[in-house]
Amino acid sequence: ICLATWPQDVGIIAMEIYFPSQYVDQAELEQFDGVSAGKYTVGLGQARMGFCSDREDINSLCLTVVQKLMERNCLSYDSVGRLEVGTETIIDKSKSVKTVIMQLFEDSGNTDVEGIDTTNACYGGTAALFNAVNWVESSSWDGRYALVVAGDIAVYATGSARPTGGAGAVAMLIGPNAPLAFDRGLRGTHMQHAYDFYKPDMVSEYPMVDGKLSIECYLSALDRCYAVYRNKIHAQWQREGLEKRFSLEDFGYIVFHSPYCKLVQKSLARLMLNDFLNHPNPNTETGCFSGLDAFREVKPEETYFDRDVEKAFMKASTDLFEKKTKSSLLVSNQNGNMYTPSVYGCLASVIAQCTPQQLAGQRIGVFSYGSGFAATLYSLRVTQDHTPDSGLDKLVSSLSDLKVRLDSRRKVSPANFTENLKLREETHHLASYIPQGSVEDLFPGTWYLTRVDDKYRREYARRPMDDDLPLEAGLINATAATEHIPSPAKKMPRIPSTTTSPEADSISNGGH
Image 1: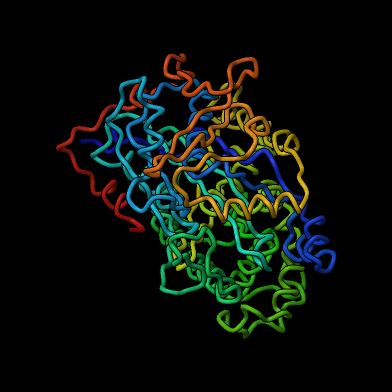
Image 2: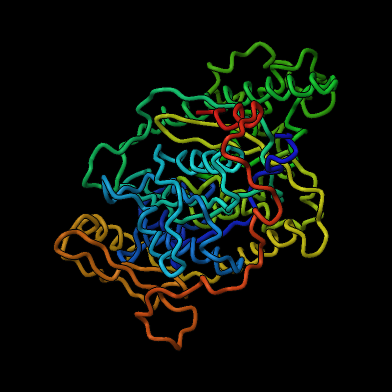
């Protein structure tokens, strides 16, 4: 079969993000915890932290974000052929979150939906996304969309890690002719064994964390992934007859997994250090490397906690940070670390704060990291088409209310926040439990836990979009909606199951 008949520009067609309706203010939390002013707000770069009451769990978060995406884009559930969930919030050691989401598909009659859950700390969402892209590019594709869901509730025991929590979910619709298309063959991956952050206690939501080791693992993975990515793009350019050197300037935007905002700023500085050390003859008299000649001989693996290197390159990368990364930190700063959806919340933040014209034609670098550890740096190419009603215009428009939604949340006191986490700690694993949290405080359209029965089976209802409807509205039929995004099969020919493509095979096996 001619390669032209394989799906082109596979990537992200639509996105939806969900975060809880309540937050705690980090400055107030500093006072409550008795720490120095600025420890969380300046030291970590965090302003607010979203959190869930006992009314929400990983299943309800994912139900909410999937139904919101389907409704906002007027999609029918029978247009989805693959659904995969990336999460590290495990409430059942056997039953997947994906199977719970299948309740939304019941009225459509569509049970032919591949995919289950994928888990490795904060990397699970990226693994699920790669699997979805690979499926669309493979001989298994049946012409329908793939749907990727990344969701988590990030909570910590009382102590220094607690202010780095958060909660939320992101859903992404994957298919061909996407406004955000994956750069083929450009993934730099690094995986290694370490106990930097892990969850061995099966009855606790809290992780074991080695903070210093985790930062070292994150930064070393960033170095390795950037080197692999750079080598791959150089090889690609050479095949195309281009003689140029890749640097951060080749990314229009770059987004990072964000445990806390200050680490992201340090990470961009880290990539500038990599550019500096890999440049054969950097200009240290003028330009971005001005005054950095003292660091020419440093070894990257010896600089993870070198304050002089960090300070010098954070200062040198200030303009790059403002231009390419700062806008990505809206959700992270205002809602905290969402684990698997974190980096995709950063991507949504960029899209929400840019116009289609600003985004068109840009290459967006994406660094995803999950402890234990697994990491990939890859890139997305934004379509050139920014005309009204184009795919890019619809994507930007769908996320344009992000800041308004963040500002519409309800602030609660640190004491209330602490009580909520105490309640979760005592009850999240119980059978025969009726949640105590208020349903009225949830955003309209939010799924919530109604009860856990004596056999640990969980039941859910949805707060209506219209407040006049009865509270226990349950499932709302979204399958009868008129399609607003056409099925990918209407644009692309289906792939015969007997056909193979060396190019597609090389893509679908990459990074696994």
